[in-house]
Amino acid sequence: MNWLRLNNCRGEVIAVDAGAVVLKASEAPSFGAPTAELPLRLGVFDADEALVGVVVATGRAGTTLTLSEGTASVGDTLASVPLAQDWTDAQDALAAKQDALPASGDPTKVLNGALEWIAIAGADLSGYYDKDDVDGLLSGKADASALAGYATASALTTGLATKADASALAGYYDKGEVDGLLADKADAADLAGYATTSALTAGLSAKADASALSNYATTSALTSGLAGKADASALSGYATTSALASGLAGKADASVLASYATTSALTSGLATKADASALAGYATTTALTTGLAGKQDSLPAGSSGQFLAHDRIFRTPPKGLIHLGRWSTPTTSAGSTGEMDGRLVASPVAAVPAYVVLSAIVNTTGASVQITVGGSNLFALAITLAGGTTAPTAFTAFNLGSIPALAAVKPSITAIGGDVRGLVVDVYGREV
Image (cartoon, rainbow, N blue to C red):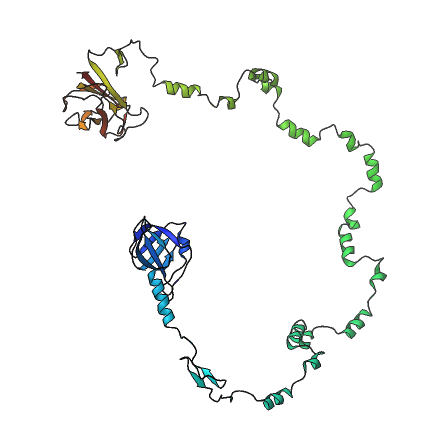
C-alpha cells in the first residue's frame, strides 16, 4: 500500500467523535488530504510525549480527521513520525523489487511485463503505405510554393462572405445605366443660386396669401396710427390694465381692514412673544391643566418618625410598628399579574406580621395579592381588594407567625381585573 508522507505534521486533539477526531484549527491544515487509497499513518502521544498508539487517517474535512484504524483521546497529540511499521513496510517493499534485469538479452529481443527477454515477432504493416504508395499520392499534389498566388479556402470563404450574389443585384442599376440617368441631371454647382424644393416650401409656409391680409393695416397706416402712442419702454414703470386688475383682486378695501393691526403694530406686538420652535420643550396650558388634575396640590405637614399613610396624611406609627415595604402598579394604565414579581425587600429586623394594607386609585374589577416571606406564603389564601373598593383595607389573618431578620418579603399579584390602576400594597410588622 502507498502511504501519504508529510513533514511537520503535528496537532492536538480537542474533541473525539465516533471514527474521527477534531484538531486545533491552526494545526489541522498540516495534515494534508489523506484518502483511503493514500492514507496517513500517525503516532499518538500523550501529555508526557510518550507514544501510546497509532492511528490511520483516511480523510480530512476542515479540522475533522477521519480514522479507519486506532483511537485517540482529548489532549493527545497526533504526529507524522517514523514508526516501526513504516520500516517494516519499507523492508517488505524492497524485498518485492527485482534485484537486477535478467541476462540473455540482445537487440533482437524485448523485455515483457514478467521481466523476461522475448524475441520480436514479425510486425503486421498491412495498415501502412510503403514508399511507392506515398510517392504516387504525392505526384498528384502541387508544391506549396506553387500556391503562393492563390487564396486558401478559408481566405476565399471569408472574402466572399462580404460579396453579394449576382441574383441579389437584380433590383440595382449597373454603372452604364447610372451614367445615362445622370446625363439628364444638372450638377449641384449649377444650382447654387436656386432654393431647394424643401427650402422653398419651408419659406413659403411662413408667408400669408395676399387675400389673407385684407384685415391688416398697411405699413403706412400702422405708422400713422402709432404716432400717437407711447413707446413700450416709456411704460416700464406702469402696470398693465390686466396686471393692475389681477393685483387689486387680492387686496382688501381699506374699510375692511379697520379691525386688523398694521404691520408695524403687529411687529411691535410680536417682539415680546416667543417663536413656536422655542416652545418645543414646554407643555401647553391645556396639557399642563390636564396633567395637574390628578396630582396632589402639596404634601401635608409631618414630622420625623411619621409615615405618609394612604389617606395622604403623615401619621405616627404605633410603638414597635415597622413599615417593611410598599409596592404599586402604574396609575395611568391597568396593572397585570406578575407586575410586582421580583420586586422584593429584606426585613431590617426580626418581626411579627402586623397587617397588610391594600388600596387603589381605580378599582372597577378587583385584585388579589399574596405575600411571601422567605419563600413561604404569609396568607393561607391570597387576599382580595373587592371591585369598587379603593380605600385602604387591612388584612391580618396570617399564615406565618414571624418574619426573620433579612428575610425576603415579596408581593405577587395572583389575579387582577381589566381596570385596576394605582394598586398599592403596604406590609407592616412589629419588631421583636
